[in-house]
Amino acid sequence: MDGSSYYIPATALAVAFVVKTPALMRSWRDPLLRSVCALLALAGAVFFFAAPPTITKVNALTGIANVSAPLVYALLSAFSASCLVLAVNWRGGPPAVTRALTRRITLGYGMVIVVLVVLFALGDTPVERLRDFDTYYAHTPFAREMIMLYLAAMTVAGLAMTVLCWRWALQVHDWLRAGLLIIVTGYLFNLAYLVAKFAAVIARWSGGNLDDLSTYAAPVLASIGGQISAVGFCLPLAGRRVGDNWTTWSTYRRLGPLWRELRPVSAHTGREGRISWWSSAELQVTQRESDIHDGMLSLYPYFDAQVRARAYDAAVAAGSDPVGARAEADAAMVAAALRARAGDPEGRVIGAAEAAAGPQDGPRDLVGMSLALRRSPVVAAVRGTAGVRLP
Image (cartoon, rainbow, N blue to C red):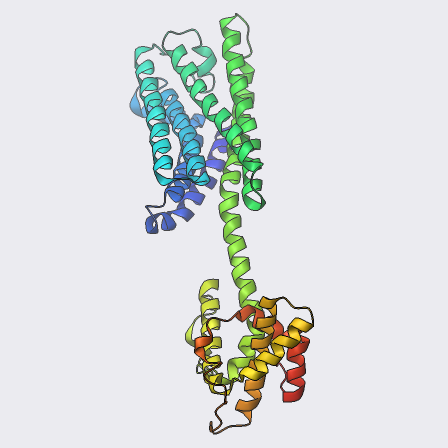
């Protein structure tokens, strides 16, 4: 693998981290967001510092042959820890338990990193090796232990993540399940990377030569596994956001019939430019609901409880469930109120049932009412009497 094979995924991960940075600044106390950002940053750092051109530069700048080896091993260990921490925070549970597990993982892998540095300092690795450090120094005291330690630390994290994510995937659905299965796939590649590394090192111990597994096959497996796992970690978060936006925009669209019906009597008519078209979906829905409530407020004096009661009975008789029947009854009452409002341009008519059908009725199912205005035969019957039609 040349430098570009490392720098391209490093750049992609850096871009993802930069995109997440504003959210991190706003919600620094969110452990899940911190874990995601830490994982993205460490994964990008691993690819960047593992690239042969970077290894050459770091060794030259420090004047220490092979100093990049413990640096990359430490980053790999920190990345392994960040994956476990993210999984713990992602799964949730009692905050105290989550914090305790996070501290244990951080402390454990922090100690691994310290030992890696100490072993490198004790070892003798004078010949710079850009691609085959593991096999070249497989027999060297202390360097040998350092290599086995980082591989063991990665193996523990890899096996734990694979088992944890697989078991969890069997219990969940939708985006989260898809993300977990992708993570499992990525970690299978990472485990294959570790198998290749162990095989090459052990072959050296027994007098054989499987260096190509470590030098050429393992980096490819690690790159594929890291990128697949990163997709798996990001997919549920991105998918949840897409799903939430889809649901919000769906609510906005479904409120359309009721909003258009009440628009002529809303206090905000003629001032639609008060929010920008590029405003968030949540703000758009809030504005539409506000307009609907304003329109209904102007119709309260014309609401007729008897119309609502008759419409409810008719909806139930037609097979609607109680919740749907209430929405149809409210929509029929709105249609009748619009007729009464249209027949009273000067605002002199007050419905006899104002007290019974006023604001004290409680919250209404606005989406259900909006759908009923378009689909309910009960509302259609009221519309036929009132001569009112949807625009």
